[in-house]
Image: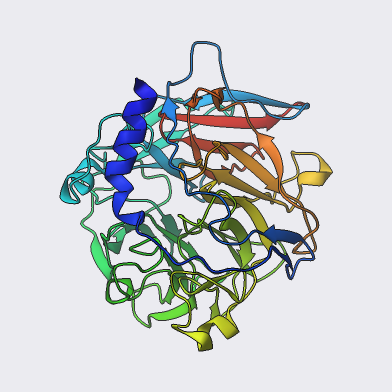
Amino acid sequence: MKKIALIAAAIAFLGSCNSNHPVVQQQPSTVTTPAGLTVTLPPPHETESDMNFPEVIGWKKGNKPTAPAGFKVNKYADGLQNPRWIYVTPNGDVLVAEASTEVGFLKRIGAKIVGISKAMALGNSANRITLFRDTDGDGTPDLRKTFLSNLNQPLGMLVLNNYFYVANTDGVWRYPYQPGETTIAAKGEKILDLPAGGYNNHWTRNIISNADGSKIYVAVGSASDHGEHGMDEEQRRANILEINPDGTGERIYASGLRNPVGMDWAPGTNTLWTAVNERDELGDELVPDYLTSVQKGGFYGWPYSYYGDHEDPRRVGERPDLVQKALVPDVPLVAHSASLGLAFYDKDAYPEKYRNGAFVGQHGSWNRSELVGYRVVFVPFKEGKPTGPAEDFLTGFFADKQAGEVYGRPVGVTVMPDGALLVADDTSNTIWRVSANK
């Protein structure tokens, strides 16, 4: 009965996405990416578009995710409320953004929420940032304090030039900040308005600065799946924006990125990379999520095409000029895996194969017949370039895959100063710490 409730709720939630689309007759296409990796794209609608939400049951006592041999996994923190993103300050404090999709959003679109609230980390968003400090260096925090509250679905965080920046869903704010502060008491200022809402929501906003702190990059996801409600609501969305630290000088750094969330710089380079959550409703294997370098002025296809010039059958012939210039992303990831978190490993505590590579948190699918994702994958790099496909790193989130049960859903990932990896598991309200055995 639980499974039936999940499916019924999902249909109510996403029913408007199930309109009839013309079938574009085409053969499977094998694409070679700029990184030399290959991906085979089936024809659109080769399989039916399925809805398959998980049931999150939480971690039972003694259970935890599984890492490769030579690593150990410990619980860093629990009892949070939808911990979505993690940021480490220059002095080593760990900040956790607690936020979620609001139930009110589902009510506004007339969706029933029976059974899917927990699966999708929905609820009354905590709208706060919690600070953790490990004063004795044993890998377990001994100080926990509310750092900043009364926010509006916060995600991205940044310390720059004696300011603390936070990206809310509707804008970027900054607050005076001094290293070591355990709470923000000063009044903040909104330096950039951002578009919020939209049918598919995509409320997360991430931020990152360049090496010299002269620019800030802001990731803004689309308002829809494939522009089905018109492109007017997509202004300044499906983009990575570039601004000055005071919020001025906005320009579009890259576009056509349906939902870019994780951002990081490849070690030893000035190249920005992002993890992108691609579109739905085209079948089990379309469209693969991806990890890609971000070219200044680059266009990555959304909503008119994907993986270069493969036209979305729902937008055929609308913008051939943009389809022609669409870039092929570097690293294909599993379709519908909800690849969101991204962190390059720039420490030396892990074995050599992991150094300078990328970790990607996959929150997990709903739009395919078999659940995929629910793991952290690793992509090897050398000299700033990918050298192979993604491989499993942190797994064990499935409780019973056939029954659609998962313990939790990983999202944000970040590397600690001591070389451990922290993983935010938002639906189980837990932060995991993955360290190498000494």
